[in-house]
Length: 295
Image 1 (cartoon, rainbow, N blue to C red):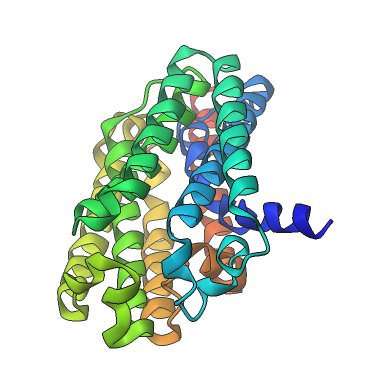
Image 2: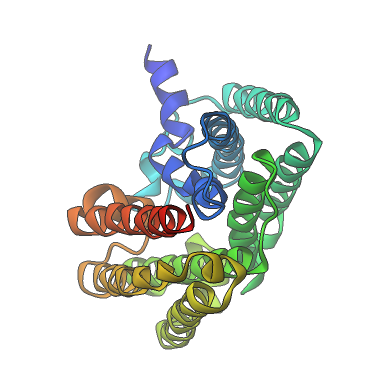
């Protein structure tokens, strides 16, 4: 049972919240009341949970030596020795096979997104995470693939607005994570992750400022000028909720030091959970109001 527990822990179930990007298309395509689409979107979410777990395990295998010197990551199952490397390799391979096999059930387009995600993130683990800026852009590309995969799974077109907002938000979260890593590790940061030598807190603060502004502007324009906005003109009322959510996350990063693990912020901060729930409810309300009006 201790080995099974170590495997489950290495799969990082707490980070499954990142795969909620898969559900974005379901929400913004106004398909959240279609049972068949709900089921397909739910399955797509589960597939990406399995696929991301395979990548997390691969990353921990390759980073085991560095993780043993990290004040927090040294507790991970592989780094601590609770999960043998051979078992981790076997589990990662099986998870990858299950994810790809299940993806084909949802169609060739969706399986293409999953295979591309696995290949890109594996390349990140091996090489790309050692290249400044490219490391965070590769992580962000994984979020975009989640978003596109969610749209393909329910057979709806994915808009450039959805992709752009996903990309900007993912970059914002990614650079916020890099900032927190440097803040925690200090002068030893580069010893744990080579690219941290090339980042600095002032530089990351500039990137975060640009990205949080760009994310808000992009989303605001989407809620007013996009084709979806023209069909649902009350969608703009979600902008203040998004604005508050971004500000709340910045507060958690700069005042609480929670930016190192975005999923932890979502799981621990009640205010952020309330904001996310409120945003979903307001989006649903905006779609339902216009749907009733059209009928």
